[in-house]
Length: 224
Image (cartoon, rainbow, N blue to C red; front, side, top):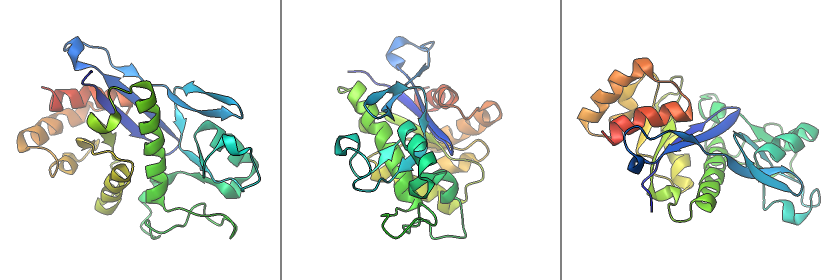
């Protein structure tokens, strides 16, 4: 059993994951984690990025073995380009949209009445749940919910959007150690000791919001 530290970029267009195994020492490389997903019908494989796309198919639209209630990732984006009113994208942006009820089932926006919509929080949770499932499939002895995980929160997010991101993560069964903001270390204050918040503040100037960057910074804070 390893003790991985995992960085997750819950992106507007794509999600990405990177990780490091501290057991390999302080100079251990940060590795990309390709995320398994349906790319095309009958083509299921890991690829570097998980498109932040959720497709809600009609009951008779696709073979039942192709999905459960929804499709996440590359095939969702591809199929959604053909039937855009059943496609959810930019869930993270919707989380920061103060002009809508972000906990209400409003997505896909302007979808027909026969589409069972979901909230921006639920959509974000489905993306994280897919990542969790992909990780756990690849690392059955090190499930993601038992590891230190870091998820980025954009500087543009208000307190409500940040809290809703936490809610989405928890719905996916995750309890991230740190939500690292590129410009506001106070996001971390409720979650980490004061000394670690100060350490994060020092790292802000050199922080890059990529999964590898997330891991590089977080391991200095969580695993000094």
